[in-house]
Length: 117
Length: 110
Image (cartoon, rainbow over all chains, first blue to last red; front, side, top):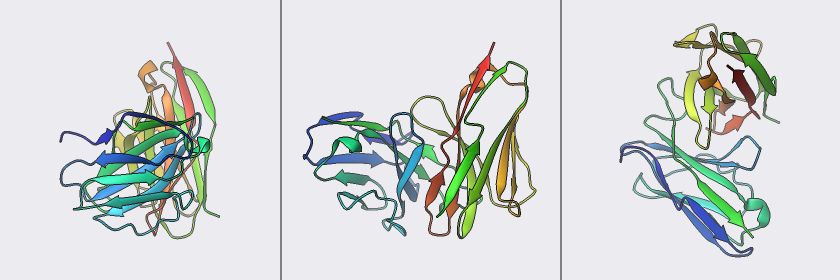
């Protein structure tokens, strides 16, 4: 596609339910990133994929959070047993080269606004 | 603990002014430093810096990194109202973890 897409754009769920957020990176981009931004807060890095593997998962806030990427393309971020503090905008980004490389440029998707009631 | 600190937290200037935004960091195994502009929801990538002393420039924006003193600055000359945004600094570590500062909120008045 032309850019990074995320779905759904908005998700309202009840506390305790599981949610799945999807990210479609730009075609051919090997690197994919998930971030979280709470109201009035800065960006919080969650996880980074190079291809299908994630070198460092320590940014995930708790074991209720998991992410996977298949086929080097689409990624899903799953939050189990959602809590009210999970409410935030979840942003996905992709880049064509390995993260931190000199030619790396990240392109962000529009985000998913998650509200946990 | 790895951390990135940005200053000032907020800044109000008039069109035509020049501003300098600061980003200092303490991380183990530094890989690169990035600057973003966030106007609404999704940040826009501005610069990636990996080497000290080499200025990156794009129009009225420029940035430089000092790996000895562990900081970077982002300069915006001849500011315009369209420059109003939150400017984010992030450091990438050796394990590809991105550590963000809280950002500098810039408002440019007409």
